[in-house]
Image (cartoon, helix red, strand yellow):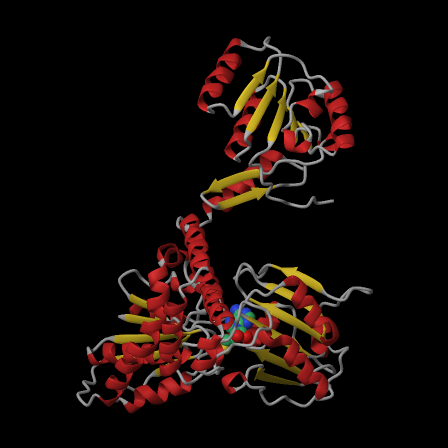
Length: 543
Ligand code: SAH
């Protein structure tokens, strides 16, 4: 059985380490590092000279938090060496004697009786907890366990994980914590100012910005600014939602350097100033026509799913304007010398962010540059691609459009769902779960032989399911949620319409994701008898 992984708060605690060994010293060091206020080593002074000098050196180093009692363990130690507040019972025990067999069993039994967490080296059966192979980098802790199968292997897995992490990861954690705190204690005036600026300028709403991290909370985009100003909770929630989007989509390097000031300025710059700039540019009459532009589909996630045409475009561009959903693996293929800008489309500033991109594209075109507008999936599937096409054509630059693999069709495939299947499904419908300004979209009728793929639906999943039920859809219809299709952290939840909301609530969201419904969802893979849902983790295709 896998154990429950915890991060144990050790401040104020008294830890007892028993035995004279190199391991006992490393246990002492770990407890001190994790903030135990007192660590007591129990071992007679008959160990090797070098070990004893090392203990003495550490006693000096750990300035009063480390004590050596030079004798064998006695049963009463467990209930007399602890702190007063907990009746002198010690808080945690590590047995690391060179030979644990007898004493280990005795101490383990006593600790179990007294409910003291105990770890006996190399004896998982005697231990009430085991230690993970850990990596600590500032606030970030990573722990790996193979549940006793192999601690060397655990440590190798840990090293592999760490080597794959971006170097700014700890700073990114630090920054996100700071930002969260600053939103919690937020300056109301500043907050109000930001929201007002944004809502003044941004009247509209963009569908593809609504993939909210928070389950089922309606985006408050169309609340008028007076209402927002009155509603402090709403302001805070709005900002929190902004932060959760940033956390979900920003590259780590940008997260690491994001400051609280930027948090405010992003709001303003994405609204007022940029919308103004964009308007000015739209009326600009001096248009030079040497630049060129391509609207390019980047595919659903994996860089392997880019077309060669898309790859050629991004490697020969002067400026790449990318959607926030375009994943890091694809962005990494953009050569360093190519200027790259990632859209800051978040709920509430989608329209301003869109205007900003258009303005930047137009300005680069007027300077004769090759602009690549890189879009998630396919540019013309819920991607505002045609709007952009019309805009640029209107200004004298007709884009070439390079298709991309859409998440709407590849998502099912990577989830082992064939949306058409003989005698099961003979039609596919791609639709959205989000109407204009957060309203309900037109709900399709139920067709037995149809596979329906809903994009932008998961942030309001319970509404969507409610609408389907009201429209007469069968609640025992198989369905699947496919998230981050083709990314390493792809996840598929297979269930039925009846249980999908409960499953998603329990498992939490991992945007972006689609909802696929229809009997086709139960053809290649089925839900085992008696289970309400199954979860498939990871992207297994060799792409
Ligand atoms: N043009 C894109 C869709 C843009 S709308 C395309 O063709 O794929 C944004 C929505 O696409 C998200 O809300 C989500 O429903 C879906 N989506 C995009 N990428 C996805 C992915 N890798 N996995 C699952 N869904 C994805």
